[in-house]
Image (tube, rainbow, N blue to C red):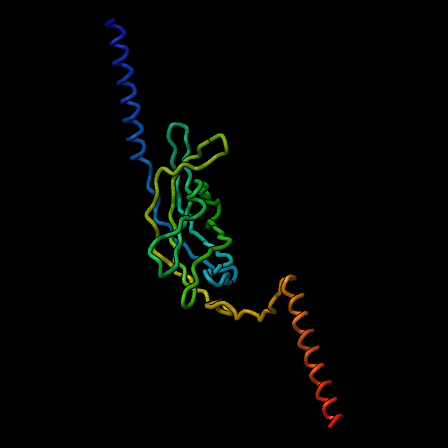
Length: 221
């Protein structure tokens, strides 16, 4: 019984030691630097909808200056990745990138620059020119294998970069109100056409009969 109790206590101590090692390791992962970046519009803008108009920005390229990063622990190599977020210039809340939604952060390239391509962004139609704010973040993480694929688990992140704003001219024509509806020809159902023909035929017959009576009166007099 005493041996079993000692083994149980030893197991608890080993688990505590492992937990402490993981905490110390997590604290020792080097924090990436705030990335520097530039970005360029690759397409134009377009407007869709009348009651709830949206502006579609058709492509933006973000060029991030790579930074040196090398760290490994317990046969695990940590890689540097990047993420971005955006919002309309007049908005308060930031929108997440698709990378953050499914842990598919793109790793840093082997060249001097990592290029992120944003195919399309949709925003509510602004009153003036289209202005979009961007921020970029560096992420240190390791690859994690799951049943559905390999993902990068973020372990340490930099602060978000200073905000940069990109301007697009207001799309033309501006769809601020719906177009005037085209005139429509009233439609009549089949059941109303027959009575209408009968009434028109009766009026035509009465008018013709009245003309004939007036003609005979003139001939008699």
